Amino acid sequence: MKILDRYILKKFLGAYVFVVAIIVSVVCIIDITEKNEKFIAHSLSGEEILSYYLDFFPYIANMITPITVFIAVVFITARLASHTEIIAILSSGVSFRRLMVPYLIGAIIVGAFSFALNGWIIPHANKTRIAFELAYFEKPYTHNERNIHVKVGPELYLYIESYENNNQKGNRFTLEKIDGTILKEKLSAEQLVWNPEKESWRLVNWKRREFAGTVEKISYGETMDTTLNIKPKDFENSYKMYETFTLPELDEFIRLLRSRGADDIEIYLIEKYFRFTSPFAIIILTFIGLIVSARKTRGGAGFQIALGFLIAFIYIIFFILTRSIAEVGGMDPALAVWIPNLIFAAVGIGLYKTVPR
Figure 1 (cartoon, rainbow, N blue to C red):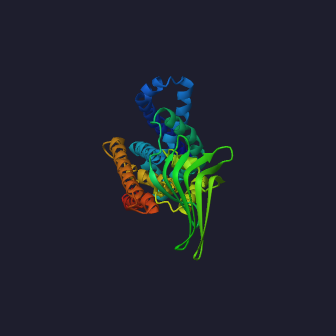
Figure 2 (tube, rainbow, N blue to C red; figure 1 turned 45 degrees about the vertical axis):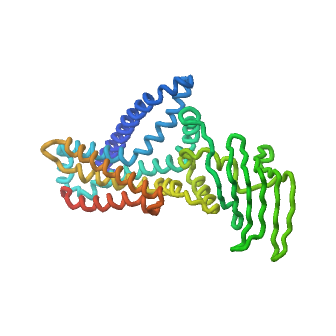
Figure 3 (cartoon, rainbow, N blue to C red; figure 1 turned 30 degrees about the horizontal axis):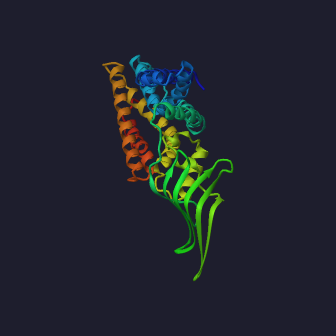
């Protein structure tokens, strides 16, 4: 690595850390101000609050990393341009393409670090952060969904009229085994109660009907223990659950939802694809930031920095818009998270033609 690469890379990473620290500190201060009454109402100690923000800080920092990288690149490149350093570098025989190399190295370093945080480290921190929010910020959760239909196996379909999550009990339970279009077995019960000691379900006042051609066999009973591909946690509060999964856990949960024939898996797919596209967003926005701020202007670095903020704002709008459409099923989740990157990659290619040579 040449002296020029080390010089720019040092400025790039230093500016990125500085921008992240400033923005996240402001966000945390605003957040503390908004939640201060709840901290006081629950008599939370300083240690408990600090522990929460030690999990909250990296979560916010990583979430805004593509934008903070972009702002950092615009900031340092605009300053280099205003000090005529970019002109001097290009005049010495270094091509603009070669000038991109230290920026690419910096973007890859930040992107790889962000991917590791997003995929494995932050989800573990989110488990305690979200548990804290559920305990002190959110209202007590009550499962009020009725007429629950769940596919729990290749041929097994479960129905519960209602479920009470406070005592882990379901009412009007039915489990049907269907081979193609043929009903092979139907198990019903007045109640479905979770047994935490055996980690199984207990059926109360059950009735089983088995069909073999035109022959029907009926059996009854007061109680029966059984295992099902569903647990009480499936009826608990799903508030930001997708943020608590590591990548392997997220893949496993998506497979589970698909095996049950669930329709509301878009938010989990978006979360998965976002974790993979975020490093590419960092690289794309790094090059756009370099291109828009590499030219020296009479007004100094202020215009380029303002333009950088404008482009960052437009990127956020695109991402929020496509994500919202995908969450309601109006767009393929993979396409939704890639559209902002594809659009801004095309913008970057167009802007590349305008850079100083």
